[in-house]
Image 1 (cartoon, protein in one colour):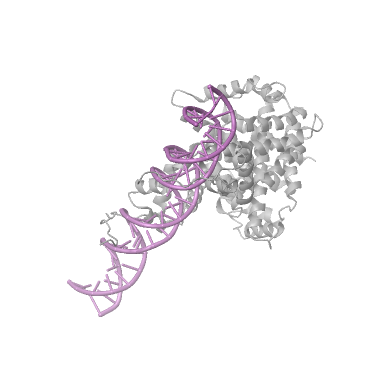
Image 2 (cartoon, each protein chain N blue to C red):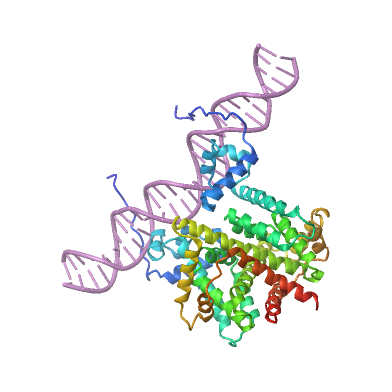
Length: 232
Length: 232
DNA sequence: GTTCCGTTGGAACGACATTCCAGTGACCGG
DNA sequence: CCGGTCACTGGAATGTCGTTCCAACGGAAC
């Protein structure tokens, strides 16, 4: 009897759904971070084995893509409903908030936009931002460049913000964001004035503590470049 | 004698160096991609065992940080030598080229900047870009925002370009970049005109095929926003 | 010569993604 | 009702990874 012996597996009452798996994956990513999404952890949370999950989902990559898509579509559809000439701030803040809620989103988005430019996530985000570029009366020749610049800034700055918050949270409940930013500023102030004059100067004037206003200031700055061009 | 029996290990002629390890790691990353950096592969390339590497390097994370630092410092020092009021194009292209040579660099940089804002790589890049912002006579209140916007755009757009090239290369030697870009445009042209009017319009006018010029156009666009503000 | 100690590298460990497959139960033709 | 099919399950097995462990080496110090 060295051959296969198998414990009787317990069956689940209701069948597993791809949707359930994706939502469980998002929950796992939100609470345990990017490295927390494990087929073992997912199996446990869904009270099943890894094999069952693989019947609904091709692999970890597809799961990540599906989770990203799910979150992005939700974030953008909240915004799109408003006025047709919606302000760019709405789209930007929609993505900013989604990334803050799901800190794993920013790296995922940049990776998926890079590796799959024709994918659903890429086109959705490009379209959402691009419409605002169009509404700003940017000349058609600059459409792609303008949309790219805004997109990369939004993902980069929002990702930075989300990472900062996650870092603060991991430092314990007794640290708040301002204290953390102050500690970073303090390190920058100790840089050599010869090698890092600019970074020191920025640190001396203190980093802005309102992340959201700071983020929007960057959007406005890029938008200023777009509309400045318009009159040429 | 069930206890440890061990094959006599062959000793290397010259001792292992942290520098050697980092350079081997960079080589491995360049040729085999981000997933190609394995302690096993590294051991083989250095003709040693994993344990020897761990005596010089704390772990994979530190190795990645060291490799990133090595490449970024080299890329920025090439540029910094020129005129003191160096043009922002030089710094931007320096990073662009470095990221093109090392496609693993862009994700690494965004991750390290996010997770370690006081680290060496973060401050070096911030300083290098910030000096150009300073040279543009941007008001001090916008220094941080302007530098952030430029940094995120540079890393995002350069990463996108490098990923495209890597993707083209992986499709086989019979595909070139223009053919690949055309295929992406073709997919975009098939999008629904109701849902994706902007993306289709951009695809219809054709994507620019000169990546470097496109990249610099984005830099100029953001710079235009900075200098437009100056007169306020 | 003996004793260290910095250094090495092969083996072992635990965790992971993924594959494999024996089983289960709802449905279907008869 | 009943036998068989098949979509679906979940536990075990596989191979690779990062990391740790440790017996052994060789030069330096004594």
